[in-house]
Image 1 (spheres, rainbow, N blue to C red):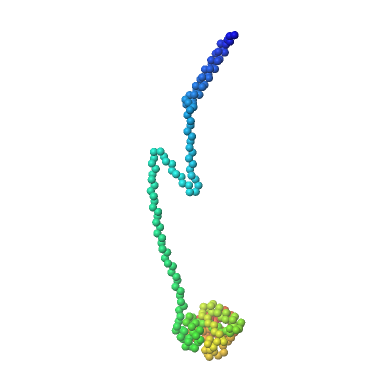
Image 2: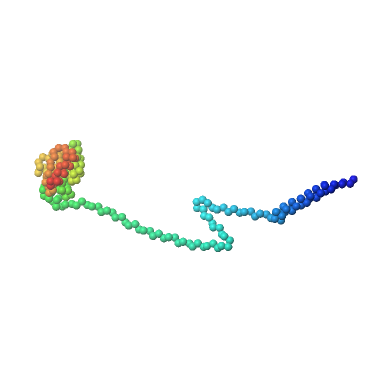
Length: 210
């Protein structure tokens, strides 16, 4: 049995073959003439980051990197601190002539020594066993400080402290306050208790009139 192909069918088959050859030929030309070439993978370089990270310079082909000159460390000359000067302590000026004059006036030694430091002296007469005398003693001392004059306490039970004053003034008040000025004159006498304001005022008046 003989298979007979009609002319239209043969023409269509030939056209399809020609079309297939043209398509495959074009694809081969677009692909660069071969599929054996493999693309070179790209290498991604990571740069350091964060505190203290130091990036290394990338060498450029054909360029010689410049050498960095080492910088000599800066020398710091330590300055020697000047020694601190301790302020001189001022010693109170003692008037020896005033002390001798008070002794010559027959005053007790503690009172005479006080005249070497101050022109006016507040004397507190007190009994160490009396509570009232203790308060009077404290007020007299505070009053002398307010007036800025010397203060001397004398125990009325001590012959050494008040013996000479008893000879001059007779019976001494207990408690009591005496205010003396140079060279050894009695300027004020307060019998009994006196507060600090009263003592300060008496000392200030005596200092102004001396």
